[in-house]
Length: 505
Image (cartoon, rainbow, N blue to C red):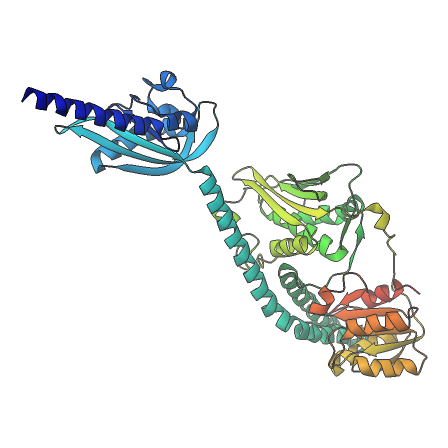
């Protein structure tokens, strides 16, 4: 009997020894024991590898030293022990702190240990899952980007499908106003009605443009822009727009690089940001427009950062992720369309850049547009064009007879003789007859060749012939990449005159 007891003790000792060696030898997990109050009573090599403490340094210390200051202040360590004791287990993922002060994302399990029905301590397992969490967050970001891309594509198909026809209708209304204004004379009632029609037409064109820009389907005329010069030129207009209760400041670094953007879209984006900042400061405040050269992170692309900072109410975290969604607005009904920041988002991405937002409740918001740098060598001087009379023969290529009638009227008011055809193929035959000084073509055309294809063909066979394209919306216009000037529909007579005046002769 005595020998049997000795053998059992040896077996128990050997079992405990093997178990201790197993626990102490595990390096991927921190496995250790706590007494009922949370004091560390054992330590393994995994705990040393993950948390940086040698056994002599940590045994006898309270396990709350692994928690962040905020968690300790909130009583989280003792709450974890209470939950483990009352519910039989405690599991959590959260931030923990190493000996050197760095943080890691941990998977934690705490089990209560009982002996003869009495709590004698806790077994604690901690695993460093920082890499897994980062991989999961990266995957989630990729899913969000995919969802955003799909949303943009769906929106682009929706808006693109109606934008061309809608802008043609606006073109007819807008162009006909010039004829009506001459016909009504000085009748104040008629002039007020025409003014209302004109305002509604511009509003409709603006809404369509903002939707197309957000969907990155807006046709653009990119050119090299001096950022500092352009912001300075807009200062007076922006200052008057924010009102007397708001102070508008400029903080433009010297030597800001030029960027390659559509000037109209750039100015619209800046106006939208400033107006949005103004509306965030109901009691007044300060808006600061800044611009500086930047190279974010480890990127090799050099950017120009253009920021609009306000001292307003800030944006709530649950709203921050929605501010660029089309039609999303926190403003009262009738005070905002929800398309201003959507236009900013679309403009930045279409220009090859991005938008960043930093906001703190009660302190304000900063929205920054990052645009790729354009080398100064590619810069071209701006041409100041004014509405002037013209001469010569314009070949108008437009398949919509109502739009053609309006465009013909505008061109004739500017002094041009107009010959009109309805397709690119007909335009080629007309040009063979000679006598054409300028081609003004819609991009969307029936037949095998659209307006952009016509322009490229003419550039090859008649390189000296001036060509101006127009479009309310077209996928082809997005691919023009500045090869040809594009006048957006609906346009007014002074815009048509300026576009023609800028054409190379």
